[in-house]
Length: 258
Image 1 (tube, rainbow, N blue to C red):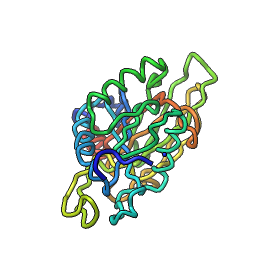
Image 2 (image 1 turned 90 degrees about the vertical axis):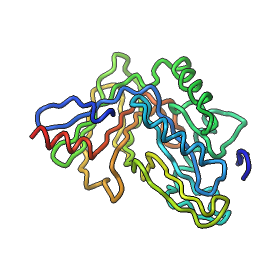
Image 3 (image 1 turned 180 degrees about the horizontal axis):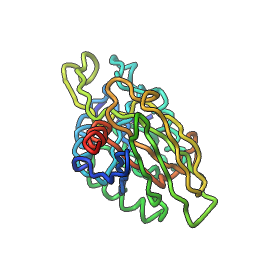
Image 4 (image 1 turned 90 degrees about the horizontal axis):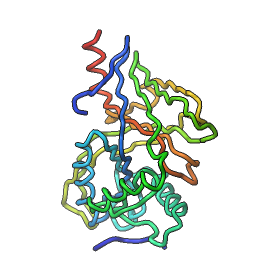
């Protein structure tokens, strides 16, 4: 797979309230990188995603796909629904580029080559120009007594419908690849999305959700991202809100406060 292959926060920048540890992100971008361990073009994009993770106003997410498993190596981090999500984005954009790896989708609306930092930065800027509602809704995440609490404020303009999704994340995962195009190499993947949990629907009124950590914190999960996205899963639109929380840092801050 040479070239692109096509298919047709600072340490707990927290605001603490009684009994809780909270982090309210004010991101300028959510970057979803569709990547594969079986793609020889992906390692530079995977590394770039790790670099982008150092910016507290960017929420980079690695969405491993199983599309290239037939080439000889089964992606150990792939979630079956990620390939469907990538295709749904392409359908919504109506573009002729189709889907490929490594492909970055920025703020749920624009796409860029995942290893091209300049193109990703342009897409971030353009996504806000095209839709003023992009990441305009501030989300609050709090960790309190073994529960993750998520809240979205009321908006002056009612009638907006969006889905709230929780993504349990592994901040860093090293994988040694034994077969396929990347055979013999060990790569580190950043902010790996392990699954998607639908919290509910937001319609412009103040809304909150609460979920026990035990329901989503499996081995290796040490952070969460929550996105508020217009449209539905099968037809995703621009993201209108997002937040990220490092669970270990939040738990430490909570312990110190107590």
